[in-house]
Amino acid sequence: MADSNEFEPKIAAFLCTWCSYAAADLAGSSRTQYPPNIRVMRVPCTGRLDPFLIIKAFNMGADGILISGCHPGDCHYLDGNLYARRRFVMLNELMQYAGVEEERLNFTWCSASEGKRFAGVVKKAVDRVKTVGPWMGFDGQGFSKEEGDLINEQL
Amino acid sequence: MSNYDSISQEISEIAKKLLKESKVDKVIGFGLGRFTKEITPIFIKKAEDADRLIFNKNCEMSLTKYLLNYKGEKVAIVAKPCDSRAINAYLSEDLIKREDLVIIGINGCPGIEGNTACEECNIRNAVICDYSVGQEMSEEEIQAEIEGFEDEIDKMNQAERLAYFQNEFERCTRCYACREACYVCNCEQCFTDSNKPKWLGESVKLNDNFTYHLMRGIHMAGRCVNCGACEMACPEGIDVRAFAAKMCSAAEEIFDYKSGMDPEQKTLLSEYKVDDSEKGFME
Image 1: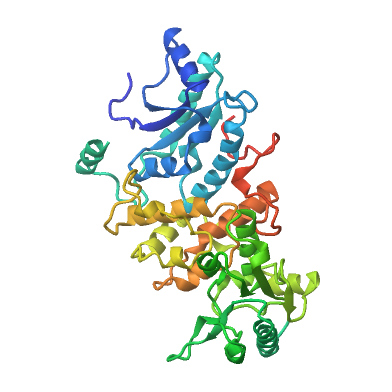
Image 2 (image 1 turned 180 degrees about the horizontal axis):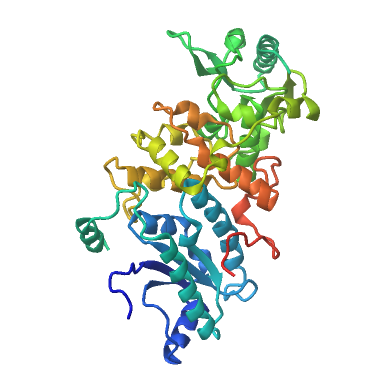
């Protein structure tokens, strides 16, 4: 039996609407199970993803992030994900330099037909974040319940 | 390496000539303040004032940002090698016009006192200039100058790095002096002032301070020329340059990109290659 006190991470997942969101849809409709730890945000394209959104997710207490878009070359907008790729490589360098564990940052590609793969990706991302434990914020103080409520209110 | 006095003299002479022949409306350079004896940016409009222009070890600010205030005017500017890269970056972003600009570039920059960026700087000659002053430094001389430099933070482990930056940013009062000093920070509205979306809280908390520096850091990716003006401007002595410097070294290492080397160059994040690195991606 699973331990009920086990740490369940909250992962902010930014999925591109044309591929990865459709993959998540496919995983759902084909009843492939994946952990319920991700909170999906649907974006038109990974190229739309401002790195600020990812930093802000950590600022507001996400334990990790998952970003998934179309495979390079398959972008609905032709080259959105190629711009995004450079951005994520640089962001990854910056976050690791700042002392954020690399396990919290999950970047990958998932096409619309890869429902099974998407479930695997989520499982892997959740496992990775579980190995480093809860995110205590940039100040290392953790997030109180009041803060959580305040954030929910703001949203 | 050139010495400060000869550079100062040459700058004054060139400025005098330019103003006498009315090739430019004003010369932006470094000089002593009217009341204090500290270095401030000065704007020379008359040839007889050109002697006030000097260059010494305290000329820490980046003058490039002033060019944005004088769009459409003929301006001459004194540029350290890092400033000349910043001018290139402005030219590549179409913020200023080359024909309105006379650049007095400093070759063989002897460095600025207290600026840690100078210890790792390998661009010691102006990359763009109309008039050059000082003696050009050869590649070997530059290498000898920066030999033995190592990034201390890079050698720490993850927890130590987080603790180091927490300790640094705890002192930050978010006065935004680093933003004002930086040539990159020329947005009409800064993200720190935006309230929809609201990226940062108003009060000075460590979580938000850290977030501010990270956000500034990612804005520096592919634009920062590692001049160290932010660090020199910080009243709390925080290592604010660390993230930007990391972005510079990472861009060079991964994408073989160095900002501000060529006026035709595109910024790092505004172009891509099909076979770009996927460093840090999940399998």
